[in-house]
Length: 607
Ligand code: COA
Image (cartoon, rainbow, N blue to C red; front, side, top):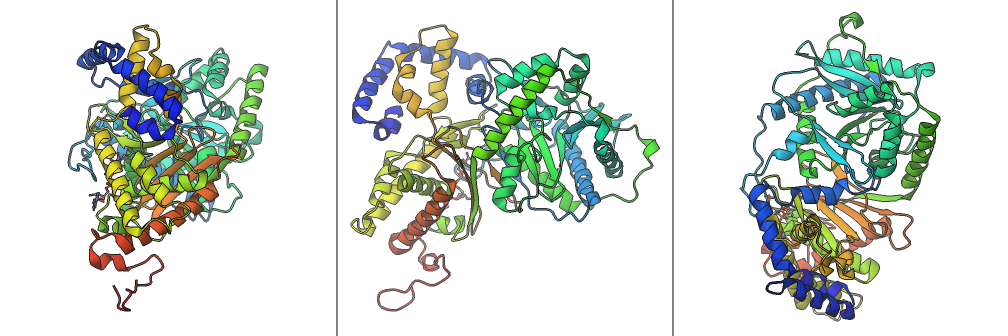
């Protein structure tokens, strides 16, 4: 399957060499068989044989800065705050919802998720939810650690960290075994806001350090913890439930793209870039200008869990009216505490370097969030095609149109059908997709419509089949990773399969894609995973599809605007093709075009 996935993406000579390497690896009695046996043994004594390997490979050993490179964000609908109290009221309401949701998780009261779409109906592992408010990604010199706190049903002393003007405040949300109500939360947030306004008390923006590369942050942290004040502050942040970042107005127009950018990197040091703590899985951002959302450290859970959590919160806020009557008197509650930092000259130097790095990241990110309104999954379903497979084939066609070739592509496939399952990869740049995109190539008129639709069907079927393999644990990426890592664990020489150039090419994902569907009006986005690549997150709805495409300006090869423009053209062409030639579609459905006109048949009658 590896050879099939790579054969058409690499030069023929290279493929010939790789074929020999793969055959040697897989020969009876060879290295592959030995490692496979070891992997099977591992599966006997682990809940999930790939989980630790995968977590390290995908996240913990990645040294890149978390913003843009690793942490996805969820962008909420723009809020219309008329005053500061409006945004604080929103924050208090949201925190109430967070506490409610956390008590559902702690009480194991969340309803079990069931698979939808392909092979619907199977119950899914709920383990990821337990990590939403209890994890912390500790930076390390070579590798990070995902630290998990034990959560209990008993309401213990719990706190949230509120970031405001780059200052961090401890907001206790359970005091004397009592959960603070919304009124109390509002009072405390108002006090935090006032404290953050006192200029003389302002401390350096230490949060910037967490936006740096992981090794740099680990180094800075090891200096920071030498001082006991800093140690106490770090400890409070590491043990909090989540962050609530009260952002200053950004001064930029609130388009979808701009809000996505602000959520991904805070707009840099002169905006809200320092008002973050990237190690914490959940940072709820509430901008005074109504730009709101969540920044998520990705290692403990997937985007789908993030969606479930945030949709609960938005529903909660809509369904339960704000319970603010009159602010409680200040004396009733202990004042929130500002976290203190002792900033040595060394730390100042680290801070300057982190600020510089963040600014470069901000300048480099090229983002385009676009709502394709031509049609949505309803049209695709009526073609009797899988909407996800269709969008993936459209992305392949787009890439081919922009770059004249296909590249190793990542599409995340949930493997939560398995205990502790996270994701595996659907390699969407299939040979069948290549055949289709070639047929749709420049001289598209030459290829007859019937052949194009046949090739589209073949590509869609190949994509759908790969999806089914992946979600049932039969894809190749996790398996290859397991074989590679177990060889390392056994201190064996790296098998040639993994030192071969083709392997390096195969895991350099120039196109990194993911479907993150939402019911509420919001969208998820993330950055590219390689310097010359694209991040493409999509959210298919009945009659439209939201695409969030990212790339780096540094790369001369990529352009998010061009990609999105081309994608829109490709989706239109594919629709035309389906309307004209897809005999499998329900007849009544193939008549409505994207422009709202009705297709007229050759004989003049309406189809
Ligand atoms: N004809 C008509 N309808 C079809 C169809 C066909 N041939 N094939 C599928 N459909 C329908 C499905 O029944 C489903 O219907 P629903 O909307 O009523 O549920 C809908 O189309 C969507 O199915 P499909 O487009 O095939 O995709 P999917 O929902 O099975 O999703 C993956 C595929 C790979 C995205 C999904 O399995 C997955 O793994 N999702 C998680 C991704 C993830 O982890 N993202 C976050 C990463 S951080």
